[in-house]
Amino acid sequence: MVSKINKKILLAASGGIAAYKTAELVRLLRKKNAEVRVVLTHAAEKFVTPLTFQALSGHAVATELLDTEQENAMGHINLARWADLLIVAPATADIIAKFSHGLADDLLSTLYLAAECPVYIAPAMNQAMWNKTVTQDNIKKLQNHGVTIIGPESGDQACGEQGFGRMSEPEEICNHLLTGSSSSLLQGKSVLISAGPTREPLDPVRYISNRSSGKMGYALAEAAINQGASVTLVSGPVSLSAPAKTNLVNVETAQQMYEEVLQRAGLYDVYIGAAAVADYSPDQIKEEKIKKQADRTTIVLRKNKDILSAVAHLKQRPFTVGFAAETQELEKYARGKLERKNLDMIAANWVGKESGGFEDDNNALQVFWRQGKQNFEMMNKKRLAEKLIELIAEKLDEKNTTKNP
Ligand code: C5P
Image 1: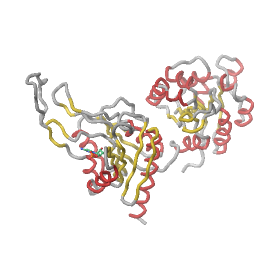
Image 2: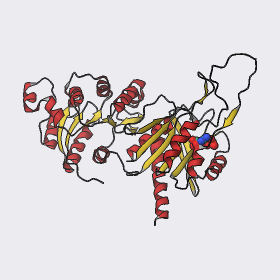
Image 3: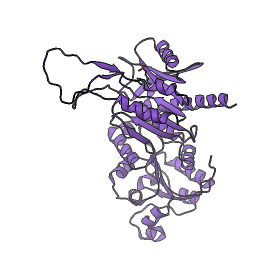
Image 4: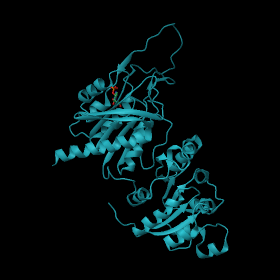
């Protein structure tokens, strides 16, 4: 673990109550040898004062875009050039929206546009504001532009509500800036994940598929990256953007997914089969569109190869984790798959009327391995993915320790 951060850090706070924690972040970063210059938006100044940050950072605080005195000290373009990285903590819904739309009507939004260094943001807002589609779209856009999102966390909020939207703790943000990830349980490890549905073509315009959204697999990719892993995501067609730093391989059919996974799996430390792979494909793909004719018609299907089982039976195999969606006798069927497919771990969930599952943002899991099990209550798939990745890291570590005591 890196213990010093000899970097020039431009630390900006926008207007949220979490800005009081930013003072602690300045102190932590300086303790790690970073040189810190602080920018406050006008809204942030309503919560905290420039004087606090001047005292903690040892530099005058920048608050104005169009101010001769501040521009003379260090103009906004020079400030953007000076920085090795820009971190915005807290980042409000407003500043996130400004960044994602390229607005530049105040000092911070202008600095973001002018900055060529890596940019990190630690969002903080009310849970409903965080969950709003427009905020999530803005976040995805920023991720696509290479911005790293730290947090937010779930828990009690200043407004009295509960949920995701609390800014990550200063220690965690500092850690993230030091190591490139918030934690390091999978530092140096490679993780291969398959996600989403597959599409099995019938003719040039039709296919057989399923309702998988890919959310669980994509959340696992993000959680593994945040633990320091290098991640390859082999994905069926979904409408999600892959987390920054993911090596994304797009596929359509079960056969393509099989090939892309199998040619890599032996080189990875962990394989997580989170995809809803079609069990069967049409035996023949018609070259021309199938015409409407008889009242009844038949499609002959052929069984697909089981990707998960094939990976788990490789001579040089990764730590292999499967998923099982069941409508009855969850543990019995899940443990059956664990044995039959030769897995290290299986994450099972109920599918059906009242459970989360395919298209839902929430899910509950029961995770089984040979000597044990763990229940994860119904929660947001992102949080669930973090917990599952922590468990995988722990069991991987145990397995490696037994192999090489
Ligand atoms: O046997 P079942 O389809 O219920 O097992 C589900 C698990 O197996 C999932 O992890 C899924 O990704 C994987 N699977 C696979 N290849 C298939 C079918 C399922 O890898 N052809």
